[in-house]
Length: 285
Image (cartoon, rainbow, N blue to C red; front, side, top):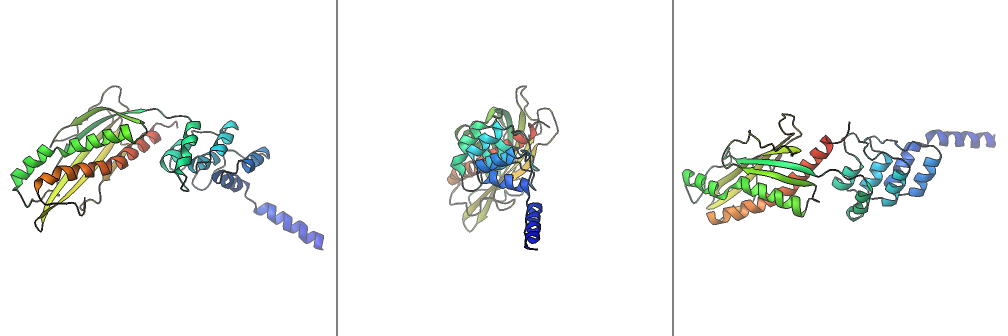
């Protein structure tokens, strides 16, 4: 009777074991010997979790260099995509998990390198509903003041600077067109550009208790050259109508420096959103 109970217990344990989950967890935690043993037993190297992630994706996301190398040597597909259309390289680059950011650099070197995208940028600014009044000048002077500040040019400059200094040199801005207060619907489309980024910049100035409260929002649209297909459509800023909450100027001479600081603060988020859209859009089906 005891032997029968032991046999039934062992059978239930085997039935309860979820081998794909075992290899996924082993890959996520960097237990390459366990991964190797499971693969030797015939476990599918392209097993998926509920988010569609394979062992290679999980190992890459968590910076498990040795496990990534093992899986690639065993034939794991580096271009496989999860439910969000991210592959192993994107997960290692854009979504580092487990506080292991410094461990992702050797992982990225093991994976196939994406192309360097060439981006054309057109930007214009519009007062919209955010440009009410200044404590220091009337509406007409405020408009002229904003033209001189050239907020759309500030955003392009900040994006270009980030692309060169902080963005891993994965995007090259091959054409930049700041058009002042105008429509940006006619986008520049150089023949060698991979995509066109249209930016509509909405600065704001509101007089609040003898200080100008400043705000700015960017509406970004990314399209393939000559196409209406939308790869990315997103607003950037600290809230649609809040903007730079707490950014106050005691005189108009402070406006430019504050807007430049804001543009730099948004450049990273804008850059990585564009890069993510380009990486997703350029993966094989």
